Image (cartoon, rainbow, N blue to C red; front, top):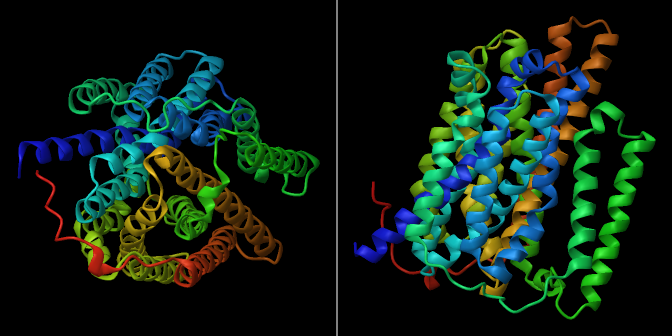
Length: 479
């Protein structure tokens, strides 16, 4: 392996480490919420803002972050995002008031959105040969999909061994190292769309639309899905999105050229990504609740319980998935992976109240690990493979937005369904644990339907890359 190749793979590891820091933060805080509430005096309602402030800015700025990367340089925006996230992590870690913590979490979300929006573009630029790109995307897919599990595990360890401040302070050395190594390993290059204008009207309308939609979704269960607040916010988000599309169709330098969606693979991959994220996020969240509330697991035990699926996911993402793409193209592995996920969710839809970890949890986890490991790589390749370099950041922002919105919406809908079914079973006379488990069954079943729908859409509309066009076996990532 040449020094140049070594340098590219090392740069990939640094980019993935920055991405992992962002992914971790979405879940690591969940374990520490009871400690944060007790220490800073949050109410049950206000505590949700520790999570929602992050989601709001993260979801709202993904598209804008990706386009700014195209205009001003992906490396420059990546460094800005890492710096914002790291400084905000310090502010979170030393926060001694509710207001400071929530504000710092919002800045973390902004930094995280910028990093997530341009990281894929940098990887696509580093790896242009098809085999190497498949391998690199597999590494990124593993980090993006498996990081949440590590977040739960790390959150449990840090909160138990130290205190909640350290779930944020641990980001400082990582962020500083990622920033320094990015400066050293990645060349500063102009944005591929340098010289283009920033579409201010488009940026304002789409960011406001996404933020309103995220706010409505994350508060939907509490406010009620048919409440004036939820329907009003979703309606306002829809109106702003229509205004955004009208603006994009008319301006000379649009934030999001609508022609991007004429690429069938991009449109299909984003639709499948919404369904994949919806089913995967819901499984992760609801199975964690099942393990904690029904089987009585501690937060640390929950993190350990997810290790089988994470390790299998890693095996596929870091090698097997790339080989499947090289041999069969992107469509067959994606469809097969989504069907494995559906099978795993169906197994979870029958877990009993007195479930056994080995017999009732592990089989479904294994199938979900295989499915996610097979699916993420071809999905990312399909979403990013057809775009011009000048639109790579935008395409990255779009696919990340699809994952974000799909995950948030899928989780909200399935959590609401689980709660409704639990209440119904409780009213019918079932004991609390039986009713709770029955609610999870309903949600897992609908999650399986999401996965099957994703497989059907991918199988019907995705244009499969011809394996014969793909180059030789990708080189292994150096250890």
